Picture 1: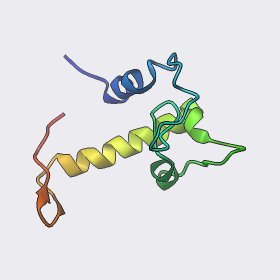
Picture 2: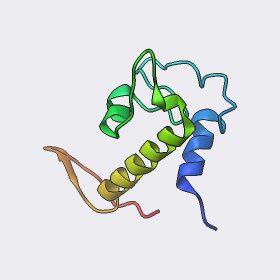
Picture 3: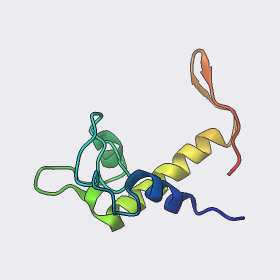
Picture 4: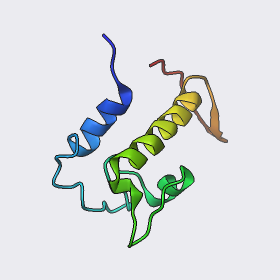
Length: 93
């Protein structure tokens, strides 16, 4: 069975855009289709301002989320030292 990881995350985070929480920001500042935090969204090139928050634009948000998932997959696909006493374990998708 093949799982579309981006689709699965989208379904979990916003019920495929149907969630009543979509327009709300979480306590951590996470918002939009993929519930990206402001810092993460900006790291992946999204504009986050009062006038224009691209986390709510499905095309921009999907692109940023896909790149973010690719990056974190690279971290967890091999043993990685995250900090002095913290290491990741290998997870295969």
